[in-house]
View 1 (cartoon, rainbow, N blue to C red):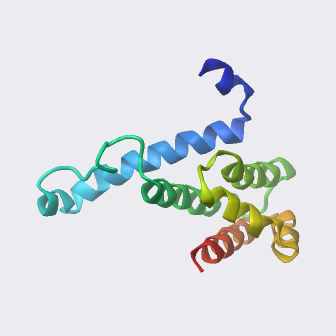
View 2: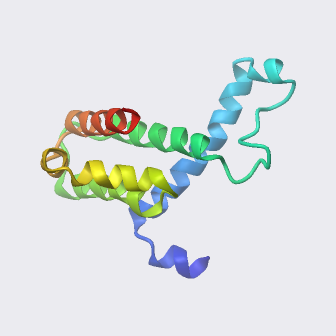
View 3: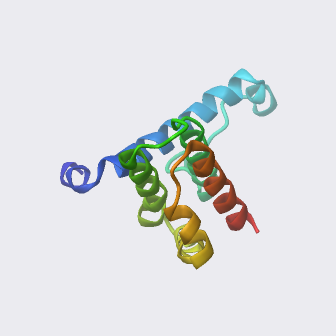
Length: 138
């Protein structure tokens, strides 16, 4: 595990940490809003309780991507824009199964790729994530 962590880029490690944190935060927030009353206990990710199901991981990933884009500075420095693009691209490298292949297909589309490569503001980053998310859900 330690060797894997060393070989991962900083944005990939951030991605993993944020996905896991978002997944755990979702459970806490759900109980605060009364979901525990509906289920009788804290909702579980799936029947085995670990690892999270594809649906739970997908929701956590989209929450993390949308939230990251929302908190970017208005005008991105070159290293911030590169980090954002690395983060989005890391989903393709780290996300399991068909979701990664679908996202790769969308990112490889020339019109999306051009827009993605030109991302230089928070607003543009938010639109890119919104379009990517909508394309995945079609």
